[in-house]
Length: 137
Image (cartoon, rainbow, N blue to C red; front, side, top):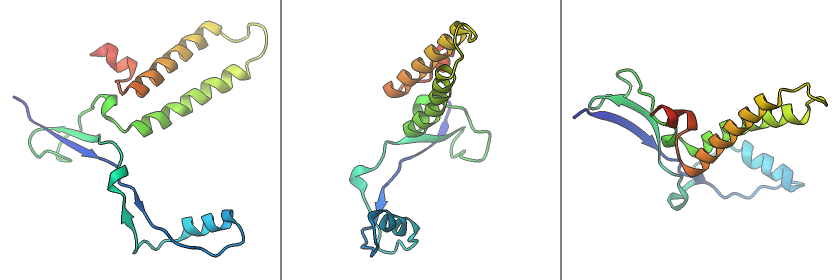
């Protein structure tokens, strides 16, 4: 039976609580973001993110020693899948909202693209592979 080395990770929130003197809340937030000192940080293990795959290789203990294998999109980081798809959806909306009047836009072409974008969004929300991947397997 084949062996695979799979690298997984999850996001672990690390936080700090500090008091900043500032004229406004906006300025206090700027100070907090710019503050590079983290010697008093704490880990919030109870709110860690979901585990996701960051790499896959064929063989035992093969991480980074051979070609990286492609893995199904459903095993990737869901937040990144959503963020990446957001850009595509925004682009579609911009094109459709700024379309000139009366038939100068290929409605069927954009309807197919919108349908595909909706299918991908639904797959992301359901934790499934992207529809194109699902059709190939």
